[in-house]
Length: 535
Ligand code: SPV
Ligand code: MG
Image (cartoon, rainbow, N blue to C red; front, side, top):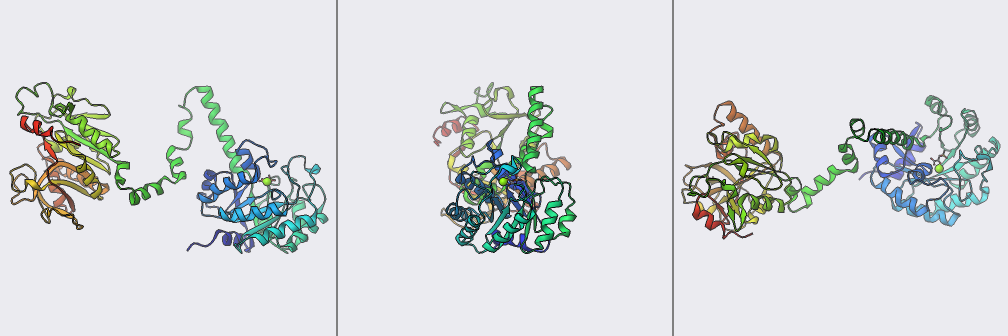
């Protein structure tokens, strides 16, 4: 089990080496901070407020802050120390705050000894009233008594230097807060020199870990903090300020140019956005949990180039794929069937009467040599579309939807063919011998292809002209195309020839049996039979 984030934060702050906490103000920026390699996150009150477009004066309610940091904690695995302002009220509000922060996975909270509603330390600093020491100690005790996780970190922030009350007051307060149970002291300063901070550190002498926020004394070399055994340094607002500069520059350019031309190459690619949102994890989870997970990334290639010979005058001007079954072109039906399973992106290879092959939602590739070439050549023309999760189908098949569902449910990373076992004793094309015949019962063991071709005898059925190519399967088909191209057989090869090559390479090809439910439309009789194929 992973170590608790409270434990990690406690160690970061108490260990001898210095720790760095980087500001974040949203789930997104928190992820960027983690990705950059930081060990912890500072949930800044200033920048969270600013990201909502409100002031750092407790204009966000405490529960809005908690809801917001919940996203930051949820999206990251490193500890988050929240800037809890004054604790949003008295000791009682502090108790609820600590309990709620623990619930949402925040590892620690800092509270400052000012009065609610607070003002940012760099605004009207000397006018800011400080909290009564005893009252603030009560708040610290209440916070520590409320935590259920023993390692939840409470940092007490001393504002005496900010308010101009001097070093002695700062030390007095730090000592009182330390005794009240604070795990660390944050000493804040608004001077550009670290002198008063160093004076504090010298006087304090490591009674308890010290946390610094060098926003104003930013020129101080980090070595100087290290040498003084500072527990942690907070880079308190630089993620937000960097994003402001970047947003200002980009929107100004877009406004001036009335175009994205100058900006697009200079902003984070959308892929970065998706990655930071964790899309990859969702993709993996979909594979595990969605019944037809491949639907999410399913595309299809339909081979519809071939000329039809056996239709009398019917296909003189209309290619086979555009013949109507129950009033709709065969190709349009096929695309609807694919779309039903989430298929996005269909490439259709046209040849015979190319211009007449036209259905909505498809991309077309033309095989101008359709009369002298075959299926494999047509497929090779669409190699760019042969990606993991592709259905490959002949454009003249009419089928029941459950056949597509069957191939998707059984599809693995390789190649999966749908085979009609009722054609075992026939002379159909693309006959198949498999590792076992169709038993007619649902069986758990996979059926694998042994041979495919017009001369396979005895056979266990015939391929219906529909296959699924998964992650590896798409690559195997690509390799088979390359090999056929290399030995000069690509032009005349059938798809079954490519599959035979895949088998010869020692790859396992799966078979899913069906019993009817489809028609390959080769003549008028088939066309009539196709009308009986419902959904
Ligand atoms: C914050 O980041 O909100 C802080 C540090 O509290 S400061 O803005 O310096 O007060
Ligand atoms: Mg703050």
